[in-house]
Image 1 (cartoon, rainbow, N blue to C red):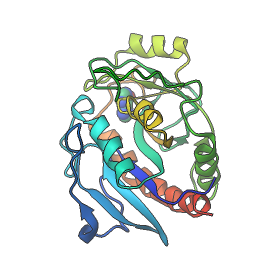
Image 2: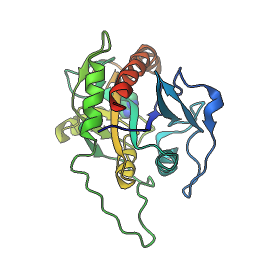
Image 3: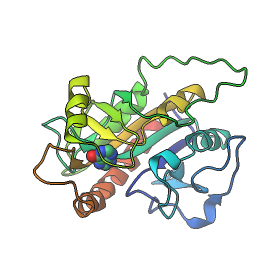
Length: 249
Ligand code: HPA
């Protein structure tokens, strides 16, 4: 499928896209409130894209403070017809390492109390989530990942979305592994479900920034995460540039 207007929601470590200029910032509001930041309308390579910093710019919003409804609504109302979310995650599966990218094919939602639907108040909606991520977007992301030097990509995986902001206990990660989760993050939901409710394709690129709790000796440190994020997100940006090229064809 050819897309006309792709949106990228950047997570931790991707607060901006280097190629998008500040002049293109679009301040918008929605019936659900304001998105995390202005929509940055610009280009990736030669293709138009809209970038949104999920945690705000500068990064100030915790995962449960993000107005996911406003973010998705604003992007779709501004004309975007597909959304790629970028997430930093911890690795649960043993063959997934820091610095790798996972393009998840499924998700388990462990969050609670988030405003997670456009329905309610008399509007009854039950979207199908059998396949939560758009297969054509996933294929483009996987193919693009193969074009980035020194990047290991896992072509599928199950994303477990926890509430945060704290990291998990070892026992929680063991339980998530038994549930079938391969990676853990805090922002995959309700983003994916809301995109489905609005009828736009959605997929995610997950950069692994640490081994999940109990999967490596010692505590998880912010310093460790920041080091991986810095170099990893440069590769994610290269991946997105390649993906955008094929998605607009
Ligand atoms: N757990 C939850 N969210 C995360 C992690 C983690 O280990 N790493 C990055 N985001």
